[in-house]
Image (cartoon, rainbow, N blue to C red; front, side, top):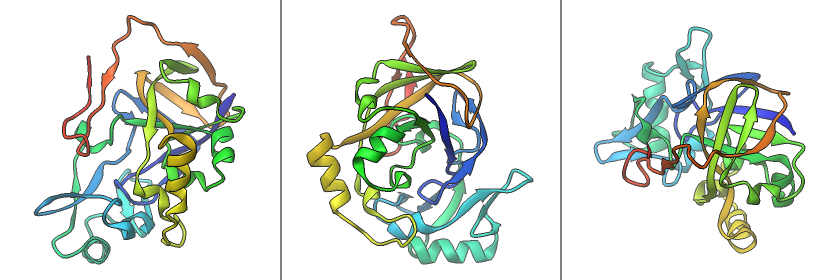
Length: 233
């Protein structure tokens, strides 16, 4: 098996950027979801503001996030965010653990994506593992992926939501995607994961499936959606 793709999402619920390498820290992929959208009532995501999912976001050479090619804090960006998410919506920088849904890494596999038959971007993974047969990932919870010095623990299969129904290119909704996941895959797809040992990984790196030390601390799922930050027990 090998690292097929790496993804980072500089702004929560906006489009992701493909990477050739990634620093994987105890807080997930460096630079992931450093910004989010909120209004006076709280955090806004693609679950209720589908238009956000079509907004491009990337990290510039200076390390600053750019939205649709402009600095994230530019007046034109503020207008774009309000148009996508409603009056009062704004971008906020926040690096706390609550910004992640459930855990701080999501792992997908090429075999399972092929079985599903839909664009893997709908799943919003951080890491796509290549060379994986069929639905093998469904037996991976409780194990780990060793990628050089990096160790990624896999806690459970991810329960999927309405975000998977939005086409990442057109913004059109196809409810059959979520129906397929619910009826064919028990509502779950890809793996809620965390960094058990940090380091740098690169596209093409060899990946080994290993047992997770039973004595190693497991995280407790959290996030704004769950209602509490995740914690390592």
